[in-house]
Image (tube, rainbow, N blue to C red):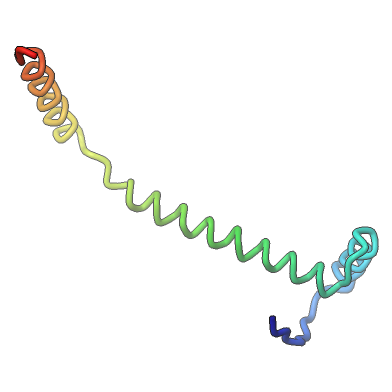
Length: 85
């Protein structure tokens, strides 16, 4: 796996907290930042996927369509009940 060295600017207080956490977790700051970014990206992708799923299901049937579907279901039920199995 290739690694890239980068520099980022963050508030000093956040840096100190990250440094302390990395020390408590016994990992390097680089590993802590990589894990945090990985988690952030994963959550972002999940949110995007959820938004796409919600958009796909947002096309719910209106009242007229629901009535039609219920009527069709009733006819299907009746057809099955009339079958001489």
